[in-house]
Length: 95
Image 1 (tube, rainbow, N blue to C red):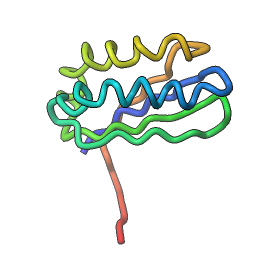
Image 2 (cartoon, helix red, strand yellow):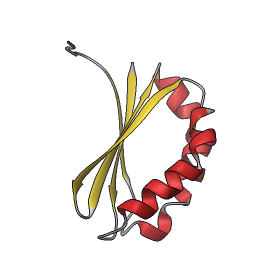
Image 3 (cartoon, helix red, strand yellow):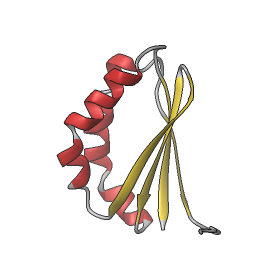
Image 4 (cartoon, rainbow, N blue to C red):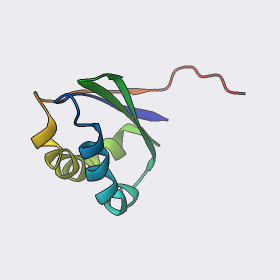
């Protein structure tokens, strides 16, 4: 498994608007090849982190145009460019 981790800085109180935008893009998000899930975690009133789970790194590269389109719709709520990181899972535990 491979993850794209996107840290987003946004205006205070923008949570509902961001979620509304993401929900409006849900069909496009579901259509991304190799994407298993996306989880958006609010870490403060002005920062959120998205964890996007893919099969492999190549699929992250191939989804770049779709990712930019989705993130482009979030620009009105963002206070700076997103910080993007990618990596393979090296350990996990489940129950």
